[in-house]
Length: 244
Image 1 (tube, rainbow, N blue to C red):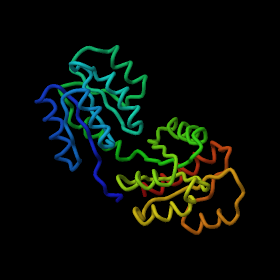
Image 2: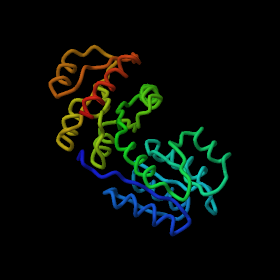
Image 3: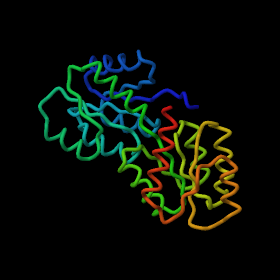
Image 4: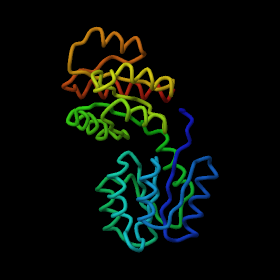
């Protein structure tokens, strides 16, 4: 599971440019999909979760910045790199201010393209599982502000579906979930992806549940309300272990 190939989407209405960039990335072992406009890109993002999207800014029908906004609603964890061969600094600035990762200019600098792809591979991907939307959003925002890629789900079934399709470096798992206990969900997740690691979160002092969580292989439990420094220290520690 940890070896799942990076999924990349290339969006460019110029066929030669699209095929050239797709070929460069594909030749280095990544899974690449190419589409020719923003509408196709939005449809593709609904079907597949892409780790990285190269998005042309100037396209007919719907430009790259507009497409970027729609895709971020569908897949906020996708890293988006804007591409342009024109002097459209206002659009580039707009995209970067709204969360685009970077901008590259045509003709492509192959080394820069591959550096961007590799940097996404190194970015820690985190799954936050919590049925309370306010707690889920607070924790996700804390993590995103530190540059981590974050996916949010509300219950155990959604968490299981998420880990079937991709590897998450860290999972924040609420202990008390509707329907199925967080520890039970984590044990099912470990059967799918044995390398996954979890930090359990709770607003209650449930000694038996905490012992269960630690026995199942969790890191120290984090209590609500969240202590930001403690949360970030745990993630930093686990991220450092990932890279060694």
